[in-house]
Length: 187
Image 1 (cartoon, rainbow, N blue to C red):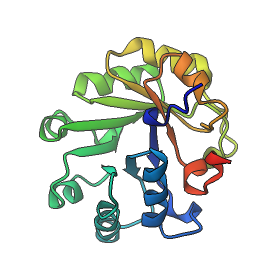
Image 2 (tube, rainbow, N blue to C red):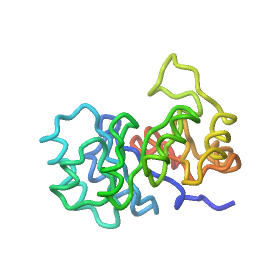
Image 3 (tube, rainbow, N blue to C red):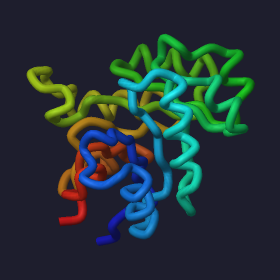
Image 4 (cartoon, rainbow, N blue to C red):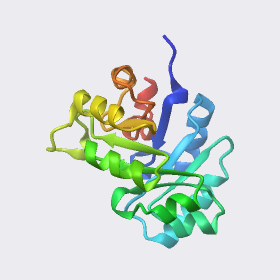
């Protein structure tokens, strides 16, 4: 069975890395994982922009700015990922690739209508990032995938052992944070 690394989007959380984030991204790129949503929700815009500049220095990384359209504009990047609440037709028209985080079929349909290029749907499996919150499950994912014509990526609790289950339900790929940030995905 193929590793399907081309179907993986890395979602960053530098606090989970034992080395600087840009070094972890370089390691992932060498493994064949190149698409990166620079999430880092705790950073103010100025610090986020500085980190984005460092990430841009990593060869073979396709960087998606998360939550800060102005940072994407400043860095002349045309790929962005937003919470659904920040998604607008204007943003979708401005950027080449626009992703949106969704948590229901209705939200996925709304994101598509607004012009999103893809959605991330979750959380699918139990995850420490959403401790105490029940996962939405594979049926949820399958329903999202069937409800939109744009690619849907599974997020939440994705591991090397379970990612095939998401792909079997129609996901275009998966988003992985913890396992890629702490290196356990490759164990």
